[in-house]
Length: 524
Image (tube, rainbow, N blue to C red; front, side, top):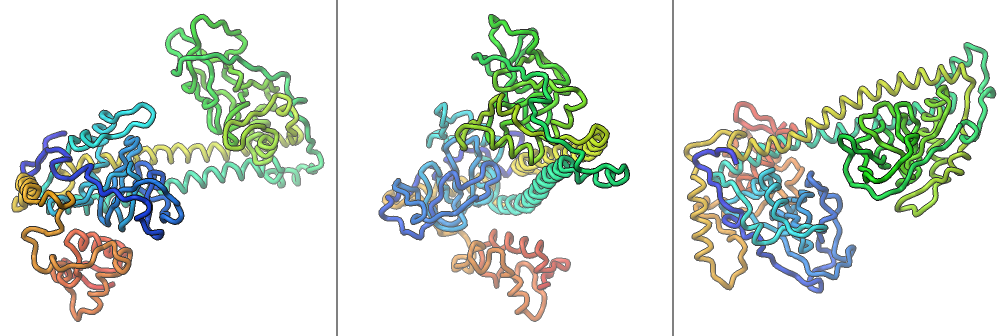
């Protein structure tokens, strides 16, 4: 870690949490309506909850870890997937998910964000054991690095990160829509091109009828189909004077990528005629249903790579290459390929050379074909330019989250307050609480808040309650008030813990449910 503020403290996760101390529950003790959380329910990296299922729906028969609302839930199996969420309600999780309760000295959202910090993720990936299914051990988890900030600053950091990263998430969602729109646009262009709709005006101007189009088997338009070999290779691209064998991942719906190749053994002799050259028309003979029959025209070669038995070269007259590429990528071409492919629907599919030859290709007259190709190239080039801008923007958003987290946990995201109680005092308080906790009680953090105001001790509300989360909860108090209120006055009415109050206030201001007029709050 880089230098941190003086009031902060570098320690271990086990110093501030009861990591690994869990409340095991057998399936017969779990109600049918209870929420059962599995690792598959959490999206990697994003912490998005994909689905929510009950015990009755899951019909689980294994022991679970009980968790409570507000706990941080950490997926210790395959920790490189970075699966961590904050529990919005009580439930039960697979034992591969470790519930970590926050405490009076540790804000739950601050802890949540730390578990996503690059320093933490690099540590757990380095110490996890198991080759195929690496897992973070309990002792290793306790020894994980942790940066403890003053409790009030923890809350400020968490609120700021909530605000910044929610914007990043919204940006990613919009960018994802752009990608889908571009994909649909490309398909609509190819559909219009191969059906004749794209040149309706051209045919009218030139007195040409759609009946002038013909339909020919692909085999009649080829000079040959060329194949390579199947041999055990080293799983890395060839370097220097080495030779490579093309992988099926080199041929997708984009451009040819010879980085997707593997290194041939030096003793293997391979015909020079099977070396991939610029201008080659390549097609994937074997792949998943979505990619079998994927085809490209090679426009770049950076290393000596040769055909395999799964990536074929179609020898096509130059004037027909682009047209056949567009047709095989169109919905009409894809439908024929998927129908002719054999194999298990859920795994690898194959299309034989004989079936490839039988694909029927629609053919416009040469002059119209040239017109179509010119229009399609122009439209797809525009889509590709937008696609490159999308990729650049997407890469920028990917680095934003770790950048904000790094800034937050070195003390640069929010200003320090010299009046904040230093982290060393917090850590000493945690140690004292552990020493005075009765040994026969579960090792969960006490719910008593030291030195908390009387009002806070009596609070029963949470921002996760149905009438609070996503609702104009605080705005309701402002509407019932005869005058505008300061944040402090509104907090006294809200019956929410401090951090929940400020998170809810931030939400309602962003949703324009509350107006902040120089520190005085009013309902919108």
